[in-house]
Length: 243
Image 1 (cartoon, rainbow, N blue to C red):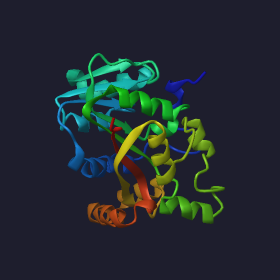
Image 2: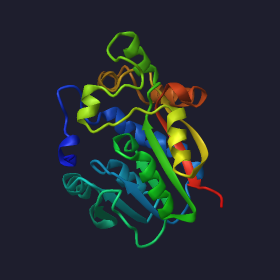
Image 3: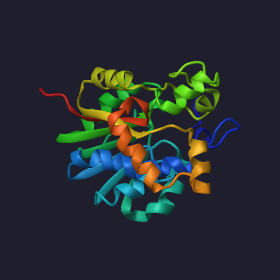
Image 4: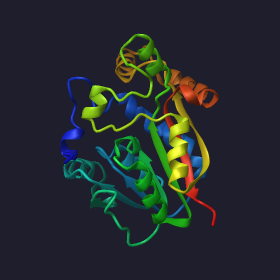
């Protein structure tokens, strides 16, 4: 039995979230923005609500489905009553109305049955709805460097720290697209967000001492458009499969 309220806490191997992760949110939305539909939005998994808060700048009607009650309490401190929270596992949730936009941000890799959950989310979408999925990238440059250093056995490995945080797999572009297609969804677009030469903790240190600034991050974002396979995160924009 998984304890979701424990999985999001820091462990001796890694933090759950870094400042770099929060910096990534703006770049993720920049990648998604050309495809964003209007209407009702739902976020699947909210952590501390920082991305949730960002969604409220794009959507007036935002819901969250989250299995960890502690995370809902924390997220509410950021968004107040502007968001509707549902304390539920994704596998059990049944929406009263379809959603026009669904966001699954660094959550798919935590799921025991990712294909089935993707299929369920697809059934929640309106006919013109879109699902936006982002996951950590197995082939990120920093992760491949870690493999070369002997810190990780192989790029798609789930490290001990990741496992303690509830990770079940580490996606690459091909495996992400394969799971989405297996769920019966159509992939409208996919790509990478932010060329990643450094590990998260190294980015945080460089941000704090000024070695890395917003101009450097912008350069990494632009470079990531050319080399999506080496990015920090990979994403897909999905729609219900044509009938």
